[in-house]
Length: 217
Image (tube, rainbow, N blue to C red; front, top):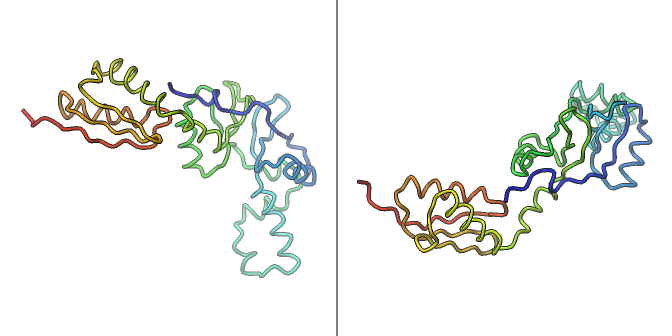
């Protein structure tokens, strides 16, 4: 089983138009307990994202005007200073937004979140219209699979289905998402490919390679 973003995303999304005021956005964050929300144009397309950090940048600069140490104020980048002077979602949003598609894998969503340092991603269709949102918690939900489910997929889909290897040749045990592989594969190349493939099975936390590789030649 390979979960997609569509399988775990939230479809009820809090969003705003680019004309939304600072006060309106602050109220939304407080009321709905979200850390960020997408900004949509009149066609429902995602044109940016406003986060707590964007709103706090404005508050920090205002505080600097009232006595915030000049050195700290000076550390704000020019782009942040310009953003902090904004009063609407269109002024404060980060654009273009980092988005993902419903058919993308959850694994890909996790990589995007990690590399782009974001906590959630708007999910958009082929036309760029908002379809949902996926958070770090949604991504981590794939680890809720039971050890039995994980082992069944490895044995049936990976070993038998992809590598034509029977369980009697290789032993698979799963404990708390950690997979241990034992036995002797046909050769080191096949063994290495099986280990790499098992690492990408949904819900696998780690793979312990205990395979005994036959001598070369």
